[in-house]
Amino acid sequence: VQLQASGGGLVQAGGSLRLSCAASGRTFSSTAMGWFRQAPGKEREFVAAIWWSEGSTYYADSVKGRFTISRGDTENTMVLQLNSLKPEDTAVYYCAAQVSRTPIMITRATFYAYWGQGTLVTVSS
Image (tube, rainbow, N blue to C red; front, side, top):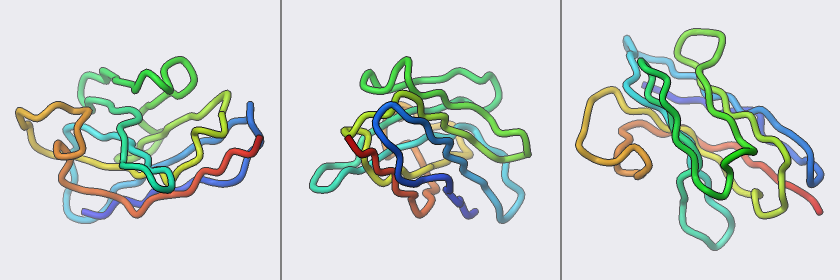
């Protein structure tokens, strides 16, 4: 299974970006997908996640109300809409996927079995 993240770029504070994550490879049936981010000098942190079948979503407090995670228009794609961006949102954003149920919380990085390569989001002040 391969995950390809795209859509990053440079944007001014208050602007918007739309990140996409496409899954490919062997027959892929996602249980859940998520986004994490890592800023320079900081640890990777949870951003948002979605249970694929029921559509339940979770957000980090820092992005709640500004970011929206959803299933994409095409099969096995996920979208993260970033609005009202702040300089502190600057980071490499990674998408991740899990195809099995696990007892680990969906907000934890260890929940996910597959990771994309990351896409850079830079927000200027």
